[in-house]
Length: 117
Image 1 (spheres, rainbow, N blue to C red):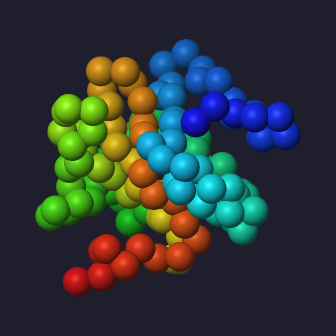
Image 2: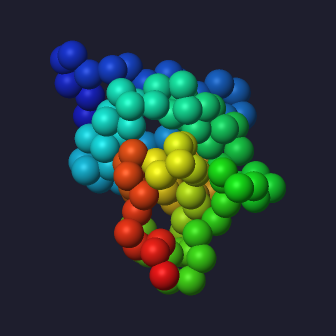
Image 3: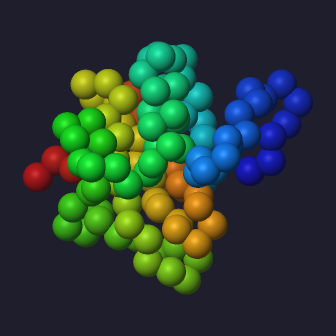
């Protein structure tokens, strides 16, 4: 998705940081909603994911499990992780080690139903 006039400008990655991109338009739209509802926490998520998308797991930042653990993306299977932005808000992303890109697949201030088991 190319930015358009009036869109927010994303910061370029610093040396060693990962690039964050949206995997789909819905994730981009929902990211904007999350930014409006929890701007500080969403910025912290951006900073932490771009610095290290695969850190030591914590209660806020960890890999997804079971059928959500990996996703086929552009002909490759990539790990999928989650960042807990708020009590219910989540960001899911794929980790592409080849391009050093974290592909945001889901962003929402609401808890994802897919993880309810």
